[in-house]
Length: 141
Image (cartoon, rainbow, N blue to C red; front, side):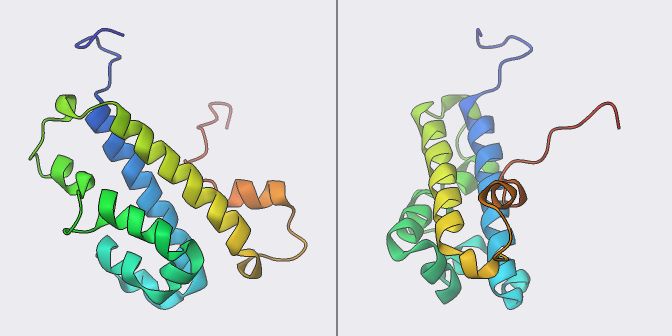
């Protein structure tokens, strides 16, 4: 779609939406693991928590900190949300980064959090319950 068309969404806006869903997913899973983490407002501190480190692994947490959640890294989410970079100027390949991070976090949670899930729960129902994106709206409801 050409830039400026009514249905065009800039890579920066798409990145911000994807990063927000990823953060929400991580917060929801960690709140299931440790209810005390629900009170943590800063995403950077949440990523530093021992629970996050043990659930996601130190390498993945480091990558999340560098890309999204730490003032010591790129922190692209904050750069875009505070208007320090025009959303249309974000390179599109960085949108791929948030998609790959989301898929990776999702798979790691599916594999490493079986003790937080009931034994009777099938992998399909686990996937549905842990879905990163919101359910599509059903217009028939």
